[in-house]
Image 1 (cartoon, rainbow, N blue to C red):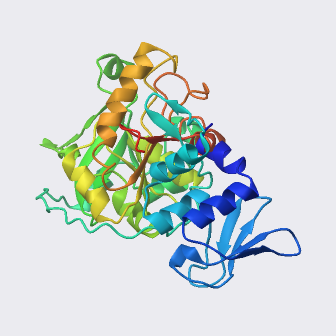
Image 2 (cartoon, rainbow, N blue to C red; image 1 turned 180 degrees about the vertical axis):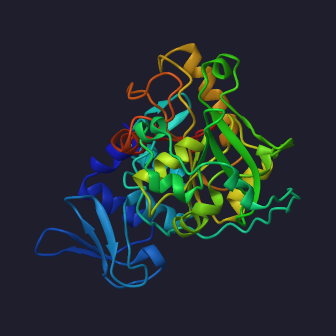
Length: 359
């Protein structure tokens, strides 16, 4: 079973057993057959922790004033991680967990809501020196928005927000990069000419009047400046490979976009430090699909690469991967390329990344 199935199949008797192991004693049923428990979620003793038997959710009506499931209750009382709490329940009742490629199924569905349930991680990232350019240089390009990106699910409003431009003379989309404070630190282009694409020059820095507007991609996160308040508020970040995915997510979730792009297929230590210093407690790795068959050796090798990347975060955050084993995406697709419903489905069926199953 995966975590959601374990939760949904727990009986009231099993919930009471876990509750008592967590230190709870008194309980009773209300007129609707819901359990009333003592508020062990925050060390209280009043019968104000409700367990709604129909949807398997607790709600604390005193100090916590929030809803959570059995795994989160175990996390609150024992201080366990998510995977530890799942394994605690699985081991207690002899249930086998469902793992794939070293990932464990996650049950959290509505990740685009604001959930402030974790403490901020106090990690200070060293500030690095990046060359800053005058943003007026962007006026060199046209405020034209290419139809190909509109067809790919990006609105003009999102392109305006991220100051996307167009180089008419060279037929390429212009993508400004801003540091975490909003300073222009580089300009990249997305080439549309077939000869440039055939030569492997899909994305590259631009030259304007002999000056190259290049910056070290590993020292910044595309979109962080635009989305940092949402990232801090939700304590979540989703990491794409390319800038276009951030723009697609902005179109899908303009008020709740907690995404950034690493502009590559790896994550640097400095990018990690930017993320952790923002107080993030949940990291979603949403890299491009690099396999045709999720059961293939190719997929297994790619899973190992993802786990190595995730190891930068797993000591500090709950870390997930959007892993397409449902054939929702084509080869090389980003999780955002097939639209909002597909992205939400991948979020719903995400896996928590683990490199070692904890007892």
